[in-house]
Image 1 (tube, rainbow, N blue to C red):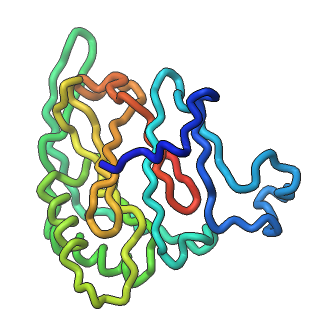
Image 2 (cartoon, rainbow, N blue to C red):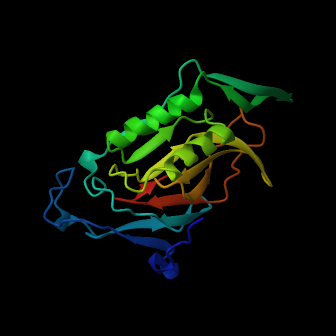
Amino acid sequence: MADQPSEWHVEQLRCWFIPRQGVSALRPARRLQAYSKRGLLFHRILPSVIKGYPVKVVDTRTLHSTASDASEWKVGACLFKALELQPELCSTECDKRFIISGTNAPSAEDTISQQIDQALKENCIAIVWPELTVSPELREHILKLVRDRDITDELEAPEILIPGTWHETTDHGIVNRARIYNGYGEERLIYDKIAPTRTMVGERKTSLRVTVYVSWPPKVL
């Protein structure tokens, strides 16, 4: 897990001041409002606490060629054909709940290989798989593929890799957890779903923080 950039945190104001990179004061704003009319030109401000959750900031900016221009971003959204989930159902009082214990997708490993190859060719800045569809075994297969790439490969690695989410047991119960990686398979942060739900065993505001993943420009996960 990456350390938080403490120099961005202003404790007295209970805020994070995150510097932006590659920002031009002369570039037209997306909402037709000039930068000269904004309070800050070169920073983003985030509170250090949101709805009682402390905010953790992870700096993971890269030199991806399209990262500085959001108009050129492409995201690889990966799906599986004929995916079958294996839920475990239980009831407590009036609630019916489930956890996903496994999945079944024909030729899932081959499909993942093709998806990563295509995303690299398309120069995707992020590659994402859906929630609760990538088992820990498939996640390790994804990471092996990106970690074992030939160092002479001229195709750029993505900035963000999100191999779905999975139900994991923690000290706070069972959570719906996403593990976020950079394009080289290095784990950058762990994100637990915050919103309360009635369809998950133990998943009721189990997250201990809100995590901000700082790239080009800051993205909030």
